[in-house]
Length: 280
Image (cartoon, rainbow, N blue to C red; front, side, top):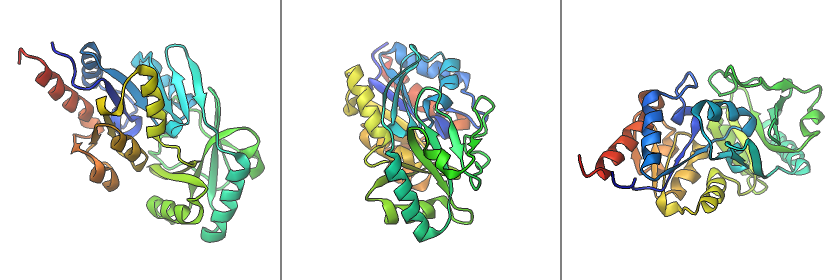
């Protein structure tokens, strides 16, 4: 077998590598194993924090680097060790919330704490949407904060914001207009609009991981489905959107594959593996 045409395969989790039941199909597992045997590295790049990603990586038998928290955290799965972490300044986060609420009114708010076991704290208004990724059996359900100040009591990597009655894309646009000079705003899933440190994206986290592996963007293929994946797909030499991906993701992708429930990642990897095999 000849070598795989890319040295790095970067995959989002929710809506991409994971099926709707939060499992990974055997076909996709086998395709990733075959690609790695042919010389590629696989990196998970997810919006989930390390605390909400570790069980998936352990189930996959994943031993390498993972980009978590929208690029805020670089995690070594084999060593169960957090290598780097970028936090959101809490004073700035408070100011951002105040400025945004002057524009759109009271918002529902949750904060993702930093660290290997960083939990998610939510105020009385925030309730995760069904299918948002907060509902997995292995995930710790977000804890209610006794008051909003508790959300900022410990270092955080990001905020989640929600406004009942306003679509995610509309809230993200309003937030960018109000506070986009202070923080980065991304839509990562159903009911999940996130507030991140300015300039932070999955691409920044992935580029850091790639440098550690001695791999470049020109040697990378990336898969994703939501707007928080756009920077990563644009950074990679070849960006692949899943069927049913957000329209903005489809617009920047180099190609579109099958959905996450139909082994969309495996479809592409198997094609590339077949093309690399002189016996086929």
